[in-house]
Image (cartoon, rainbow, N blue to C red):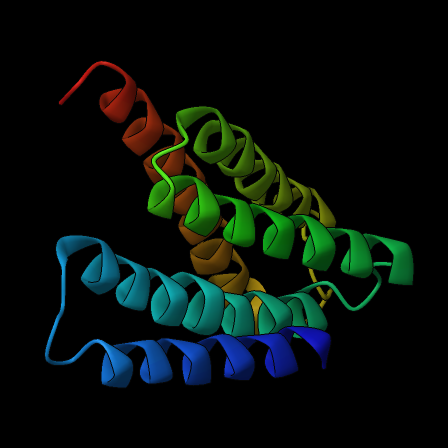
Length: 145
């Protein structure tokens, strides 16, 4: 439920940012809008739904830990990017990647239901893809590409 509530809040915030900057959009506000809606909103809702369905045995501390780290990372990436503070962006990306790695570990047992095997594999591939993409983006930004 926290993932769903936060994901909806991010999506609404992204829509409000898009509306507020519609006539004066900059590259940063366009990026922030997409990031807020896609990562803060869509990915977060999917992450929460997947944890609830594919890792029903994960304890409450694990779920809240992933939630907190994911949101701390999101806020950090936004602040770092919008203020051009590379160190904040880097640290926040590490937090995001760590939250995804934690989710990967949390789903290692799966739900035990045979019909979830394909979804579990797809979810775990998506987690790895997102984490690698985030870290790659930070590395490319550091070397100026």
